[in-house]
Length: 371
Image 1 (tube, rainbow, N blue to C red):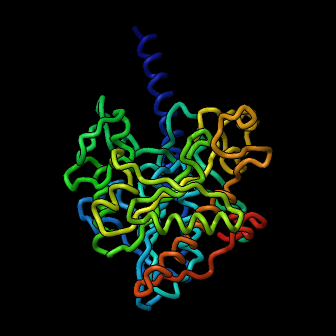
Image 2 (cartoon, one colour; image 1 turned 90 degrees about the vertical axis):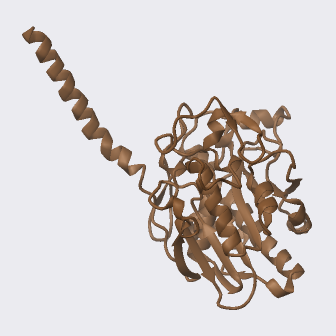
Image 3 (cartoon, rainbow, N blue to C red; image 1 turned 180 degrees about the vertical axis):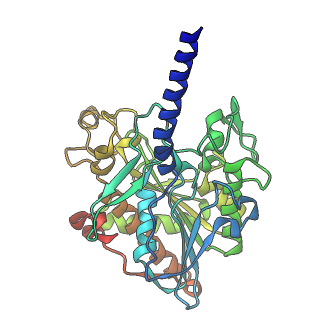
């Protein structure tokens, strides 16, 4: 009997020791790299300022306003809808830290799903962080998940039913922000985040909204601009200009029957011109080899090189891969061009953004140089 108590005591001490060791690591996952306030930032709000139902929840997140002080339109840029697609939130952070409007306004949400950045997808072997070299030293960013953290929203249903349309998807999609729009004020946390973003679009009278994503090289909608029907003319002209500059982009219409996505629901529920962009990230795919920080940052994978030779991919893939600097360059350059085209078509709602690096500058100097 005494031996049993002794064994139980040792097991309890061991369990407590493990908990004490793990808790700091767990808490680190809840800490996000600080964002530097750039020269164009005039105010910092929270998503809960637009929908009070998010206040005090894991879904509340920072909203950065860059206002020129001059009349014009307003563009919204979203990063971090899926936090395992880092070129999205890195592009948003870069705009916050560098961009300066000279007409109209830009509003940036770097981590649209703030809960998703606090964990990684189980069984995927994903890194928990990525580190970039910058002129002021290394900066580390969380590498998150595609979906809301289960500790913030659980359990998943067997089947997820989109509230607005009745569309049925896998149960885990209930935590996917880009299947939750236009959201619900009385819904689950993910639906509340979606609802809050739609309320921001309405209250700020956003003229054009851009959602930044990444996708697997074998996914057909890749290195592309996806546009709501009302935004198709702007997206088409932007795509042609980028192509003429040697930057290959595809153009895709927002499917009318696929519900819950930003490029469809924003455009249907509000007056904004809704656009989504995808870049090619091998860390997102199912054909990849080792999933680590190097793959995320360098975008190189010999298995994807072989898949390209077999004709299995929708983007070119060679030994140069698709590094993070190229992916951010694509996003930021396309955002800049979309704004230019929009402004040419809407003279009375002009938006002009300065201090944005060029595509070639990103490729030669790397993203870290500009952070």
